[in-house]
Length: 227
Image (cartoon, rainbow, N blue to C red; front, top):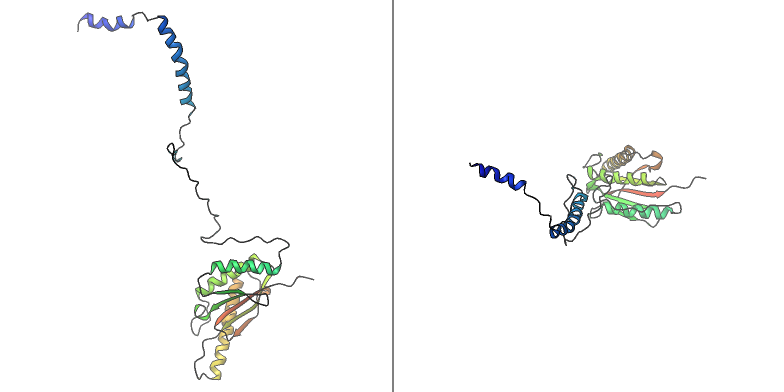
């Protein structure tokens, strides 16, 4: 490499700067604009890690769905909040709608009776195995919700708690009928025990009874006010 080539960069670096009026005016115009651009870039905060990307310009933004309460099971229906002026009949009507939502589309029958009580009837085949008094899971699921309803409404109680025996066959003897009645009482006692295990006081549960109907029958009513 010749000495001339080595000196060329140095000579360029030492070359006098152009201080013409046109260049001075151009610098005064561009420098403030460049300062504004740099300030704008510095004011934009970088995205947080994990933050969702901003939608592109002109894209439609839709709101996200609201979260459901953690203590509410999927599909749980909304319930009305009673106040001090809510009557017993209104409380039972609220519980009727609440229970009906849980068991809609099932054989469980939930209806308000003419005497003002709320009836919950579960067909026998979903309640017990033949000859046994142990509560089947299907009946247990209904009793769990009945217990929850009673806990929600301290002013309610069971006015009737009955269970059936096994279906009577044609030509059954008196002893067979007596055995079926005994089995029905054992089944009703098992229903009462299930509700007690779910935290319902014995004073709020009806006396276990044998019944000739082909279903477990529960009647929810309001408690008499204290004198």
